[in-house]
Image (cartoon, rainbow, N blue to C red):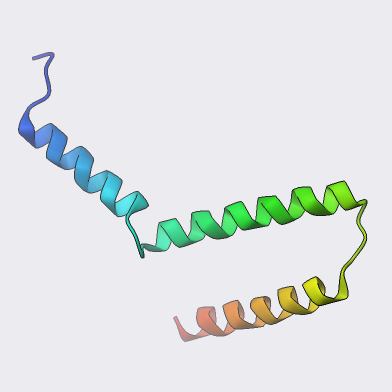
Length: 72
């Protein structure tokens, strides 16, 4: 009863592949989250100075995300 069978291991493997597998939605979301946290830390470190190039890029990315959400 205390040991794992092959079925337990297969289920865990499938769950891990779904959550962290390449090309999955969750892995992309987690990558975006990591990039957001990195940018947040960078902006806190810089004292809130805005870089015009970064602001323009962020606005463009937001528009692209809105377009993708509207298509869904």
